[in-house]
Image (cartoon, rainbow, N blue to C red; front, side, top):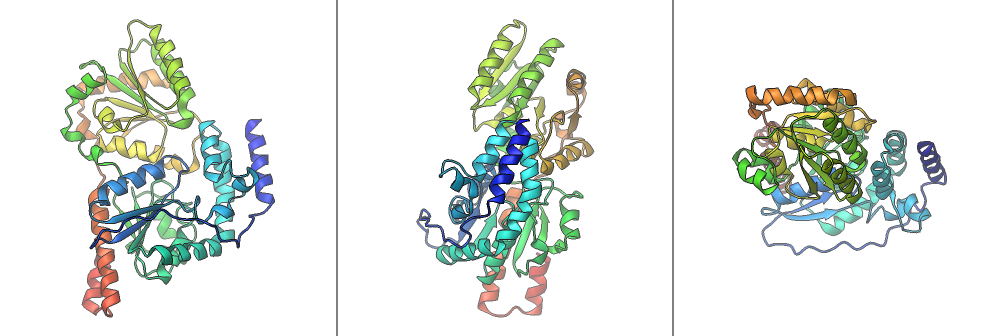
Length: 437
């Protein structure tokens, strides 16, 4: 019933019209101090979900020493007056906050409905206005290269950067690229690229079927924070001691994100019911209510050991010290686990975001883990991995992510191409070299 009410509310909001389409927002971006000799990169990000912000943080970490980085959320700045939710709530909410609230409430069906049905329509309806405002922003900020780590706006951003001869990169983070590639088959840009995390029917094949040249698609993995590339060298004994994890006990890490609090309770109850001899490492984030409920539940069992983890930036350490991860099919968490050689059990027992469904198939097809379709299968799956722990090392879950190295090369090549085009027309030899890059 709640889902129906939310759908009706969203429909009413949209039917009132996409208001003030031609009013320029009165915004002021924070000015960065430019460092002499450094090129300027501008990154488009979003607060809708955690993935975009995590990816942005990773980009800043890996590129910040070499480039001046400016981060812009266009939905909060130049597209502000286009947000009907912001208008009707008198500035107390916005589209991104509405998405996050629905996500936290577990109303995945409503977010699927909004993003699948209305997202493409809204992009097409406002494409020219998006492009106009982005063009003004880019003229003002004068970046040497633009990176978009968000969907929906990429044709408009591509057109705006093309008109100003600015190299443009779309860094995708999902296993389904429908929302990321809207209209990109129409983009005529001499110096742009799309990075993808994996070659699947819903990534590379989908893009090529849309008419996007394979020369513009680069399979390099996902942007991850540097600690995930150091897991092979981490001292697991010290990490376990820091987090009160018994040294020789099979450790199940549970990380379910915003809507997964209720799932954490269900999974914990099922593990206790089956008397599994494991240590539970449960990531509660900022959800104090779930943390208190779990503590009350677990304290009743004297023979169970557990660690309840609040919000932390040490997820890489926790994955390095774990034997199995139970998680929702979010692409960032899956990429982090694969990079950490950590087997994955993906929860498919509840409704998932449509762009995350491809991640479930990816995990199983590549033998990175198992799919949990029913709660009754949880204990048998954990027992199976407890047995594998003695016969199958983590290294069989090979790391595949080359993003941190490849994005640096890609940016350098695109900036070189821009410099050559600006200086003089490319010779046939130069053009061939750059095309191969």
